[in-house]
Image (cartoon, rainbow, N blue to C red; front, side, top):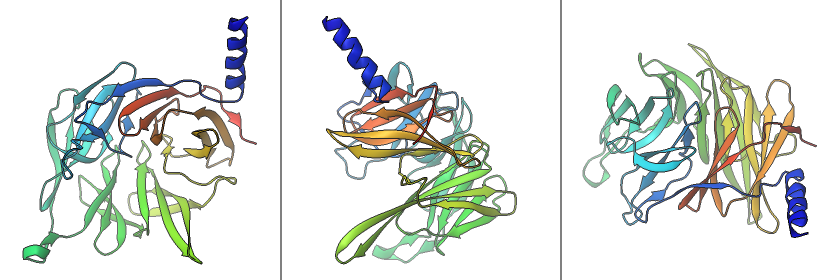
Length: 317
């Protein structure tokens, strides 16, 4: 009788789209601390990479870790500290070296062997002196697998820089508030997420948006800015399909604990699809693979869980 009741409960949960379990892939060592917004799958979905640093040191460098997406495990990908990075293919990563004072160094390497070579350098202009000494603004937001970087510059604008040639293309004015960006796998589209805080009557309100761009050799064209997607608000947990024609994102809800519902939006057809609901402790960030089949979750910087998404998506009501 107990077996029948348990089976019935499982069927009800699955029918409601609720995830009943996630596989805990990695439990981080005590001296490691997982950083947010930097987890990525390899293009074939077999590997995941993410940043860690020693939480006991406030300004400790960030190092890139690699692990199997099925077996877990943990090892450092490169000897260099790493900031922004992307998978170029299933064997190579392009990364921006951290802690290179006064210059930008971008390398390409194999995370399984640790071998890397420099593919781009830029000397930064020195500003000020003494205690006010610093460098010109050159914030690398995102890197394309095709060898492009999205850069926030001193003159309050975003530009795309082609790494081999150094050619720049203007994207837009520098967004206000917290922002992030991702390229499509083919390098032809770019999505930017922006989160702005407004205060009216003493109360704070957060406005979130996605801006989707099309990239050519000499210009960047805004396809559309989304402040909502069929009544749903853009979220910081998002991804772009290989051709940039679909957006995957989540909606956080809290009822008897907090959970995330997973949606996929087709930019061309306007169709909104829904997948499963994710529950796994206190989820700080969620990252999806390029084919929208898996999700990896950062649970309070200490454990990493992985979900398989349903093969069949249902039209959202």
